[in-house]
Image (cartoon, rainbow, N blue to C red; front, side):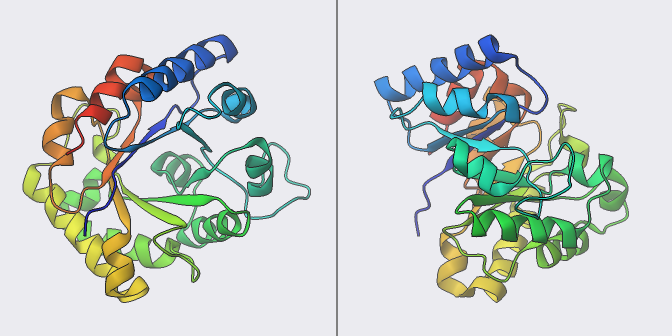
Amino acid sequence: MARRPLIAGNWKMNGLKADGLALAEGIAAKLKAAPPPADLLVCPPATLIDALCRAVAGSGLAVGGQDCHAANSGAHTGDIAAPMLKDLGASHVIVGHSERRTDHRETNAQVQAKATAAHAAGLVAIICIGETEAERDAGRTLAVVGEQFDGSLPAGATADNTVIAYEPVWAIGTGRTPTTPEVVEVHAAIRALAGKRLGAAGADRLRILYGGSMKPSNAKELLALADVDGGLIGGASLKVEDFWAIAQSCP
């Protein structure tokens, strides 16, 4: 089955209002002029979501959050709830990014709770999974990915409300990428895991993104691989031309 690719930009903690608006408007202008064969999404810092949603409305460029809390409200200083993101106009939210799992010690159970909250709020949850360099060197890649997939995917997950992003931790922001056979192996394993949870038809529709130093120079090769349905882009999403080049690389 042909799955429409998703190219998602994770801006991380980058961008003041003027810079963020210029970046999003630049992408939106290109999108309106010549739509690529992919859905485009940018996930800016929470401070920019409202302004960006207003600026790119009607362009086809989606806006998402980088994280959400599992609760809808309460005494959680500094956190943001999924309904708050939805209220601003966001359509997606990233949960379980390796930087959250590492820096904030987030567990699979916590990621699952966040994804559940995202679904309840009407957001698409982009659930990130991936192994560290030590885990890969120990030959535990598929075991780790399997544990994270099973532990992070909510019971109500479907191909419509969930996207999986495979991000080998050791490749994020390093310029290193796995070999083609390594990427194919992991994405095929994720598709097989999805079959057990979503059924064959659901797994066939589920989009599985690759994240980890995807850039214009390697995007075409990566996006052409079996079971790679787009990319979760970090550094390259902070430049209009780089992000657009990746989107144009979709088959």
